[in-house]
Structures are given as C-alpha cells and as structure tokens.
Length: 318
Image 1 (spheres, rainbow, N blue to C red):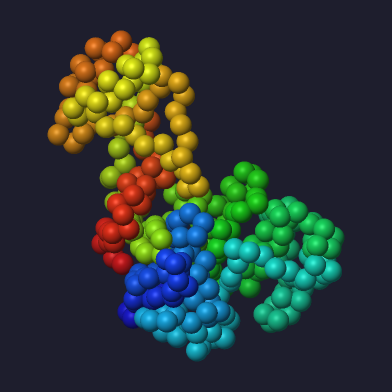
Image 2: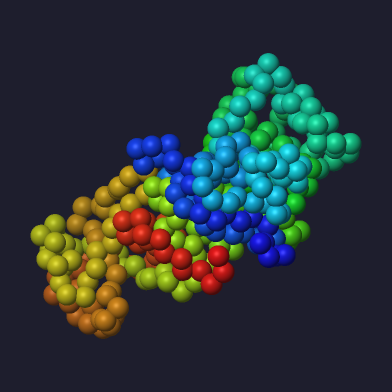
C-alpha cells in the first residue's frame, strides 16, 4: 500500500453460494478521493462495505484501510471513519436528538456545532421518536451521524435513499465541500447523477465482480452523442435500425428495462460511419423530428455491465 492509498482490496472474496457474494475484488482508493461504487441491488456493494467496516471477514484476499486490516483492526478504522449503512437500524424509542447526542458522546465530540449545522442543512427535526419518523428523516439522522465528527474517511451505502430531490442536491453539495477539505469518500449508489457530480473515479460491480473502473476524464471522452428520432410508424423504426452503421440505443435502468415512446427511437452512429452518412440514411425514412443529447453515465456504464461480467480495468490508476 502506497502512502497515497487509504483503502486497498486485493483479491477479496466472500462467497454466500448460488452466485451471491463478491469475488476476487481488487481496487484502491487514494487519500482525498471521492470514489463511486455503482451497481443494482444484490450486485455486492453492501457486502464489500461490510468487509471494509470489519463486520464480516473475507474468505480470501486482503482488505485494508490506512494499512490496518479491516477485520482484525476494525476498532482503529472505525475511529477515523464516518459510516452510513444501507439498511438503517436505530433505537426506535429514542428521539433523534437523543441518539445523535449519544453518538457524539461515544465519538468524544464535545462541541456540537457541526452536528447542529448538519441538522439545519438537511432540515432535520430531531425531537420526535425515531420509530415514528419517515425513511427520509431517518436517512438524515444517518447522514448527520456519519459526518458530525469530521472523519478522515466516510463510507456511505446508498446515502440518498429516501431523500427528496432538494435534500439530494444538498447532499451533493456536502460531498463537494468535504472533497475540498481532503476527506476521502467511498460511496455506493445506484443513483448515477450524484456519482457523476461528485466522484473522481467510479467502479461498477456486476454479480459480485468488478466490471469497470473509470476516472471522470476517461468517462467524459467515451460518452457518445445520442440521436432521438420520431418516424411515421414502427415498421419504419425497425427498418431504419437495421441499416448498416446505425446502432439502436438499449433502454435500461438499474432495476429493469424501459421502452421508448411509440414510433420513437434513440440511436448512435457506428465508429466507422460519419454523421453525413447517417443523415442520408435517415432522410429515406422521412423523420418527423430529430433531436440530440449526450449519452448519460448510466447508459455508458451499461455498455460494460452487459459484457457478461468480464473484468474491464479502464482506469489509469486502480
């Protein structure tokens, strides 16, 4: 582990059987880096994080933070780490304020200024009993608890789950501020927008294995231009997409597939074809409209995600 490296996994495996778990995971996170960890539910994100926090022990491989073994030296790691679990479990009969004050005491925090600032930022009313709070309010308690002791490292499992769009934006602002301070962040998510706005590098995990690791600049260079076209009927759409050099965009989201509007298609141009050639082909089908947009991060990662689980290390520093 180099002096710049804070987190390092080498060949980490935890096999629960029937294809569940994580297998031969290897990646590192540098000090001051915001590292995104993307994948759908069940891909292995939470299993990875639980090993980093020392809650479960890898069957094979090495899992370290700051040079400490994540399982045998978990207590040392947890002192410098802010943690937000993917499945929150709080004492139901405590108030939010009671819980946060208890956690502050356990963490040795005497000045509650940062805790109160975070509560104000996220509009957290901590006075009711946790058991009666909404999912979003519990999530806010978890975020405040993770950041209020100014940790050097923050590990977050689906941090904006349950938050409304305004609070999601405030969370992104918080991560960017922490990044400026030099805080290291590992953030698992299936929310591409928050990852795109905050992360220096991003890994995607597929069925327990790393499918790709990309840095932001590399990602930006790989994103294609998408053409949105409405044709007169479905037959015209079918024939147009069968033309040489025209590649249909696959419609996906992290939890399933979605379909385009009737008679609408989104497509890209094959690398060996020009825009002029593509437009000449399109003209034959009498398009009713044509718009363009840049490929989203989600669409780009699915190119790797659908390669059958092969490992694609596409970053200059892993």
